Amino acid sequence: HNDACEYPPHPGKMNWSVLYPGHTDPVVRFLDVGCGFGGLTVALSALFPDKIILALEIRAKVCEFVRLRIEEMRKEAPPRARNAAVLKTNAMKYLPHFFRKGQLQKIFFCFPDPHFKTKNHRRRIVSERLLTEYAYLLQEGGILYAITDVEELHQWHVAKLSEHLSFERVPEETLAGDVTVTAITRETEESKKVERAGGRKYWCVFRRRPDAVVI
Ligand code: SAM
Image (cartoon, rainbow, N blue to C red; front, side, top):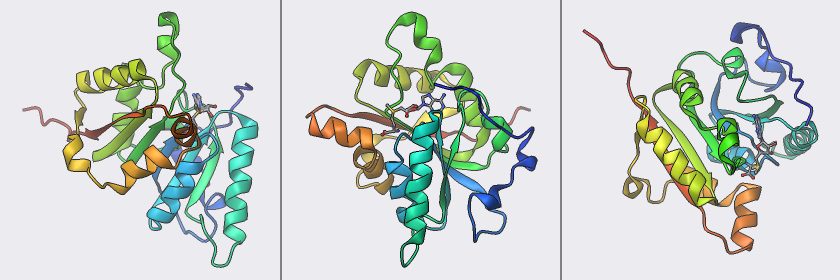
């Protein structure tokens, strides 16, 4: 895919009002990384009408599909998805250009590309280095969700997140009936595909720990 992405020099230079008409000074709180066809973002926009939600996608055509999808929803009566938008960018490179420290409340990694071969593991979107970046962007207590149908990748997610000092796992039993977990397991296009094929889905939820106070 075409990897040429536009990005602002720093978050202060980003004009978010263009993406969220009708909102004065919108601040993105939920981030759907590698959104694909946008099913999660659209579902979240209805579940969390007071949150500003942004989908990121690196493939231009897929991004354009999501943009049109949102545009159509906004024309409905009453309008939907006014709190949702999509941007074409490489989420592994430019996130700190778009978002400030501690501004995100939830970040989603739904069915990310598995990059099976060991030599390609460095391309995985959950890695030690990138987790430090996600921790920087998440507010204290903010939540990271990761779901995949690849068991080995799930184990990788759990291992990398468990080892990282800025994250702690949210126990599964405390998440029973959580609407957000239901959304990641049912609303993304990839989750529906896995469902139809009778495949398994593995997910985990981690919380951004408060920064340690060093005395
Ligand atoms: N999350 C969607 C779902 O669950 O239906 C799509 C899953 S799809 C398997 C992975 C998506 O991540 C693809 O659309 C791909 O283009 C996108 N992607 C991969 N690397 C990316 C990156 N560095 N930045 C943004 N998007 C990326």
